[in-house]
Image (cartoon, rainbow, N blue to C red; front, side):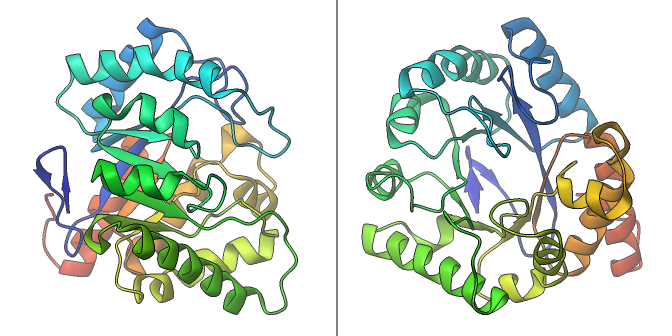
Length: 272
């Protein structure tokens, strides 16, 4: 997979997507990086610690979040996307499910990260296809009522993939994300993580995005600030199940976990 002219060997390597929330109300780090200077400093820090992609989000997607207009979201992310692209040689992802926000920033981004898997905005599939950019397709749904959870989960993913195919989004541009923390119970989230290999079996690179999420807090009885080890554990499981990407807040800890896991699996010192 090519992202910003760089080869991502998704069959053999594992890559880190570093989270940069430029929102006042993100569940984990709201307000920490919503100024240009703070955002750039944190970007530099994440790159130094091993981040391969920087994922910029302008609207919180935590449970009960307040939706904002396209215009407000663009105002939040556009200056930061532009500044990161100008200062750093790192692929930049835009975390947005709105076609208008994506379209307004196409010249500054290298990947589209859509938490609704083309099912929220009817124009998103067309925008993604026309852009030719890599696209992260996440599982989500408006209700959490399932007849058979994992069968319905996989059917939802395949439905999104069919939308992508009809729109002309190339298969080699797609990354799948199981959507841990979205329209799922704690037990269902654990199942998605545990069955990452079955998502990989669809033939697309898979991203595990569990960082600091409620499934870790509920499982371990830990507050947000105490969820790094739980996140690292899910990173290791994801890698062992075949994931090619992890999306995390805490870069250095997860980078070490990736290196150690890959070194054991390959029985050699692993260097990306």
